[in-house]
Length: 198
Image (cartoon, rainbow, N blue to C red; front, side):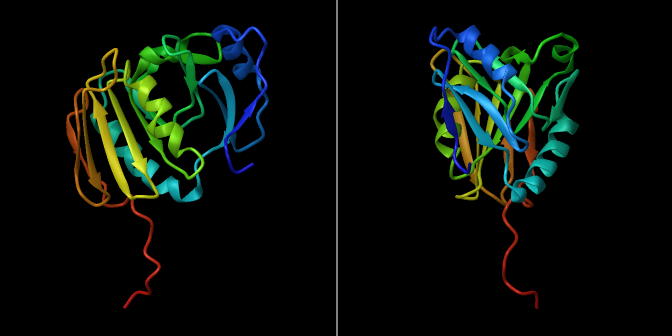
């Protein structure tokens, strides 16, 4: 399974029933289940080459996160009832108090930032469906386009989606807007060069 795979959903099609099914789904090791466009989609977790950028990103975000918020890459599901979606972001910064509750998913309201690292199989969802849902609620969304070696920042959510965005090539600093408000060092995000050392 290299590509995201939609699976059967309850005939009722109701968001809460679908969300419950996602929560109870026993996915194979290395895979996650999300609720995208009314379908349960199972896709692999990030590729190995994403570990270094995620680690660098997590470290920098942690130093600038809002009080009570912490970055993590653990496979937690966040629901967006207004969009009838539920995503397991590659990296998220969220209110730690949201994890004091029972249950298998947290409300998307707990998020202050989400970052997705694209793969060939997930790129469309990251740039379209997730951008649309996050853009109504999450203060900052970062897309690390691993194929183009660029990072995009989206901010200022509204009912119609994000009002502002910018994109830089890996290696250039990216300003991460409030509530973080710092310049992100992206110099370690690009894939290692295959050229031999001199």
